[in-house]
Image (cartoon, rainbow, N blue to C red; front, side):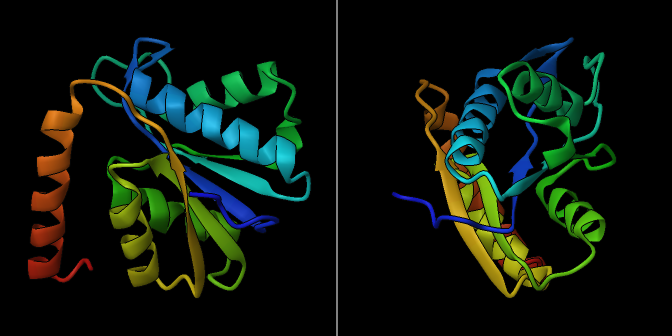
Length: 160
């Protein structure tokens, strides 16, 4: 899937950090963000993810370090370091952006992008688009059913 070009912002959803090392899921999301930012120099990124158990730095900080080490100017990056789940990722990121009006992309793994975009719409984004990253691991056997259950739960409690 080709992502929409020249979005105002991309929001990169966090995933677990092992100490200071990105897990595969977060690394793939961050690599996708790097590619998007290189191809779309007018786009800014919100790096979204707090610091959880076993994490010595926040998920946002891990992404920031990777992107700046790979040539993205720090001025294009906004760190959101309070969130602990997808809904908070989007709520707090939109708070930092200051509006739901800009064109926004949600960067997350392919198995999670549908729910990320749907939650973004529920948060009030008027123009929100998927920017999927790949994820190749046997863990997909666990993650896909978990996503389906999360979508069902979100529908029941009204998050979607």
